[in-house]
Amino acid sequence: MVEQLQKSLKKTLLSNSISKSTKAISRLPFFLFFRVLLFLFFLPLYSSEFYKFKVKSIDGKETTLEKYKGFPVLVVNVASFCGYTGQYSNLESLYRKYKSKGLKILAFPANDFGSQEPNSNSEIAKFCKLKYDVSFDMMEKIVVVGKNKHPVYKFLIESSSSPNEEIAWNFEKFLLDKKGKTIGRFSSDINPESKEIEDKILQAINQP
Image (cartoon, rainbow, N blue to C red; front, side, top):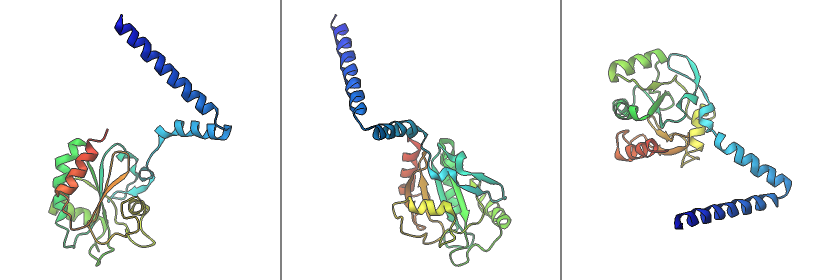
């Protein structure tokens, strides 16, 4: 008997709550009411701008970043003749450790700093495979600084915690969560396998 009364009370309270909410929305001017409905309808359809960009893999195949939706993604600008080039090894180790949990790594070669990536895309691919056995995704060589920077990097910078700071050097890292939101920006000297980066990656992996 008590249980039935509790269920009846909960149903009544819920009904009253919905009724009050409906009345409150109905009192809004029509244009506001229409905007609220649009917001509620399109909110679940929201998609990060990151997924809309077109890129080319290091072998020249064009694609969009849509295929990375739903996965944490670490984006790195790389170079073959840099003091941080050894981080390729750390990136590969990190990738193998977490790829079964969904981690994706995108490496964009760039020759913007000290001309430390003069090689062609095919030469870069060969170098990475032979020296570091890289298995994460390598993209074609792009520009990451200045007015000609690739749109992907324009987005990454502007959506980061330091939107007014250009990329400072090779092997700067950006971490995006499963919804394409930038949740971390790490300077070149921070090792990919550092606790700081791994903790953020685990946070992204455990995101619903």
